[in-house]
Each structure stands twice: as C-alpha cells, then as structure tokens.
Image 1 (cartoon, rainbow, N blue to C red):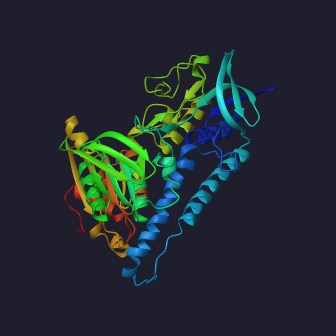
Image 2 (tube, one colour):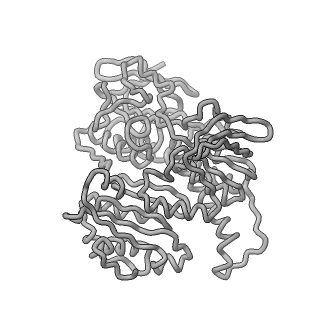
Image 3 (cartoon, rainbow, N blue to C red):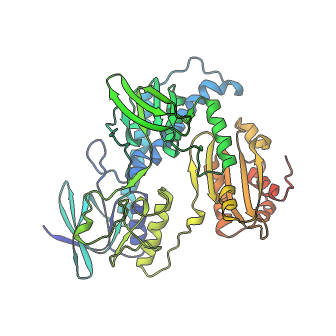
Length: 476
C-alpha cells in the first residue's frame, strides 16, 4: 500500500472540514479531505451532520411543512381556494432527500474544482512522524496518508437520554426525526432547544399532536427574555404544547409506542404516552475511531479536542475546529474556524469573532439573535438602553400576512455601540445579517437609524428598533 503525502489533511467533510479543505487548497496547499458519511447506496455523502441529518434536511422539511400549513390555514385569506388538501409524505421526504443529495454532490464538485483529494472512509491517527502525522483511512479501499498539518473536524453526535438509547424507530435522534414514514398521532419531544422546536414544528404542521418536555424552568433561556416570551406565546397559539421545569423519569418503549414518566414543575408525577419520541438534549463531540491516544492528542472531560484561541491542539501541526472543540455547535462557526485555521497554516491572521456569531431557530416565527441579551448586560452591571419595534406596524409584514414578533436593539447607554440585536418574526434568519455587520464594525444604534432602508421591507423594522433606542420610532 503506497503512502500518499499531503501538506494538509482534513478529517471530516462537514461545514467546517469542507471549508477548511477548500481554503487550504486556495492557498496553494496539497490538500486531502477524509469523510465517512454514506448515502443510501453506500457512496460518499460529504457534508456531515449538517447536510445529511441536520441543517439542510430540517430546513427542507420546515419549508415543505410550512407550505402545507399555509395551504390549509392561510391561503383562503389571500383569495386562494385549494379544495380538499392532502399530504403525500413520501414525496415530501423524497424532496428532502433530493435536496440533501444536491448538497452532497455540490461538495464533491467543489473538491474536484479545487483539486482536493477526497478519501471515503474513517480516518484515524497511526503515529507521529518527523514533520507530520501518519493516518489510516478505513473505507472501501484502505489508505495510508501522511500530512504535515492535520485539521480535526469530526463534528458531534446526538446525546442520548440515559436508559433510553436511540433505536431510530420509536426513540429518535435528529436523524430518525427527519424520516418518520407516517405522521404520528402523538409525538413527544424531550428538549425545547433548536432541534426540538424545529422538529416539533414540522410534525405539528403535518398533523401530529406534539408535546415538548423541557427540564429548564425558563423557555429558551439563552434567548432575550422579551423575545422568548413572544415566541412562546406564538407557539402555544399554534398548538405546540411545551411543559417547562420537568424531571424525566423512566422511558419505556413498546409495540404500541413510548411511555415517558416525569415530574412536572410542581413535582407531581405525570405520564406521557406517545407514538414516537424525539430526544434533543444536546450533542457530544465526536472522536469515535480517531485514535487520539496514538499521538497523544489531548481531549477534555467532555471528549472534546482541547484547543487554544487559534484552534491549535497540544500537538504541533494538529488543529481542531467546529463541534469537536469548545464554543457553540453551529455550522457557520465551524466554517469560520475552518477558514481561519487554513489561513493560520499559511502564516496569515485568520479571524473569528465569537461575539458576532449569529444564532437562528428556523421555526415560524423565526428567532435570531447576535450579541448580548438584556439579562446578560444587567447581570454584568453594564448600563444599556433598548428599543424594539413590532412587525404588526411594518407594512411589508402586513402585506405578507405575517406580523408576529418584533426586532429589538440593545446599545451601550453612553457610547450607543450596539451590544445585541434580537429578532422574532418573519425571515429573522436573513434580517440578522445586518446586525452582525453592524456589530462587527462597532456601529451605534444611531448608525442603523440613519441608514436608508428600502420601503416596504421587513428590514425597516430593524431601522425602527434602532430609532426606538433613542425613543424616536417613526411608525409606532
């Protein structure tokens, strides 16, 4: 077996890994990427959790299910009569799979375009060599690779509930939640985070009776409290039942479904009987099969690869990015770290600003935020001022028939620098980009307030919220 030599080897072809490989190749490095994801035919399916069982397929189903709900509940208000509505779930899931494949194929095309050597299989460390590392790729054809630099981008796995392992038939991770073959009559979710709310929204729209059990006493505790309250009210109106402050007990899976014993917020014993249960209680770093012991790669108590601020590990020439290291488990965070590491290998100054990484929950209404919440600023003792503007006063939102929510801008009381922007409402995922740019350039709320925004547009709500920081909103 011949040994193949590379300047940079990236382990993992998810958002962080693929982007790291592409940027390294752009910078002139002889680059390889190793990824083990398989499609239904056993072929390569790069893109990691995000493309295969995460961001991309979930957004495809969210879009399809939203169309279905609009046709059933909202088209009539626009003068559109659709007659008897029916659901072809197999076709909907097929469309989702086609979207995933398009993304898989797009990544393989980009590897080819950038002359990146792709290896389909699982990479593991073998030993450290002078000036590099030997890796073994176990796949359709085993390979031996040597790289001067290695970037670990192996992502994360769904965290299972103790005593209730995933079988992906009745107790589901995000993977199984995306391919339920028939709409369950009753669906349970444990965890009211991003995955729980998004998957709960999909199946509720398609006809399931959905109950979400959340251990924390507050709904979306990481979100600005005013925004979270607005979102919770909207979800309840839609029929998404969320119970907070629960303590999960025994989970039993049988032929008829799943039974969840739990204590409610008052400490009273309860039982939830459902056809399917989705568990979304977080994710854990994935280092399975990496064999870090062979080279002495340091992991922390969570199993994450230990890195410094520049994503350097304890080993020279070994880097790690994305979900497998500290920081938020977000695809776009992994991408930024991937670019930064490739540029640092080239002697440049790669940059990632953790303070301006946006967060998004793709429910309806969407929830998006960047920077600090009012609660965080108050806890830190920082003087601030805040302004908000409701979408019900926005002309474009009225025309769309989607006026739920608001935009909120929080700024420093003395300097007026924007410290956070929080949105719940239509297309919040797109609107948040303006806030990220503003914060990256240390803009003030006055800066956004003075910028001309197109009319009618949803973005005018951001301008009005910035005006409201100084108590001079024009349309509310």
